Image (tube, rainbow, N blue to C red; front, side, top):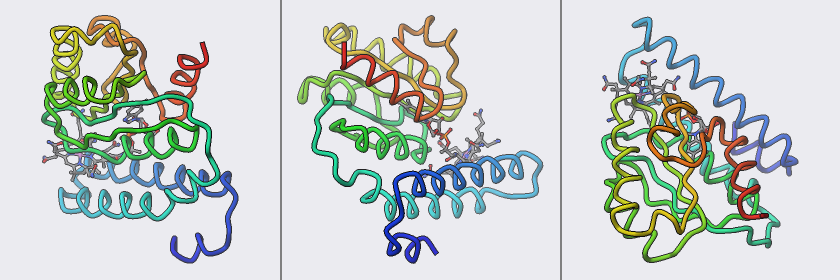
Length: 192
Ligand code: B12
């Protein structure tokens, strides 16, 4: 299906409509998991489908963008294997002209610190879907501080359990919300 769709030269708007429909599908999967209609195997299957879909759509999302707006080190924090939202943010940020260093999922604070020291980004983006991973976001900010690189970057945190209150308390500069909202915030930072 998606393979056929990409051969029909869709516009960026049409591609984004497919991404949005897939996101809605993932919300339905989550609800069915909560009500025990779906099981862990369904989560795994839906996750694989979504990541595969994103890898097919990615070239269309980032096509024809030569501008370089800034650099982002991005990763899902330690203890959390969810990477679909991170991957969507990555594609949309690339489409907006950012250079992304994606360090992957289940990444300890030290991995963020090492990458920041190596590539000196403008922004660090964390993703966390598990409530249990909120401590990892806190620890990531603390590790950047302890390594003396905190003030060289802006930090944005995304994922459902993140709230503006949490960001204030954890020392995160911005609450990401949706990927689209996160891009707006990041563009605002690099344009200043
Ligand atoms: C798919 C899925 C999985 C897959 C993940 C596959 C993968 N490659 O990611 C697998 C099978 C691995 C999985 C495992 C588990 N999962 Co799960 N999973 C889901 C599910 C159904 C969808 C998540 C998803 O991809 N959503 C779609 C994306 C697009 O949305 P998103 O991630 O929120 O991202 C958007 C924004 O948040 C934002 N964003 C995200 N990151 C970032 C970063 C930045 C910088 C910015 C700006 C924005 C941003 O942009 C995105 C687009 O707008 C959710 C249900 C749900 N409703 O979310 C449960 C869910 C997250 N999982 C849950 C649970 C409990 C688990 C398990 C513990 C289950 C178990 N018993 O083993 C394990 C934990 C494993 C681990 N250690 O991480 C719970 C979490 C509850 C909680 N609050 O802690 C949920 C909410 C299901 C539920 N309703 O109970 N899961």
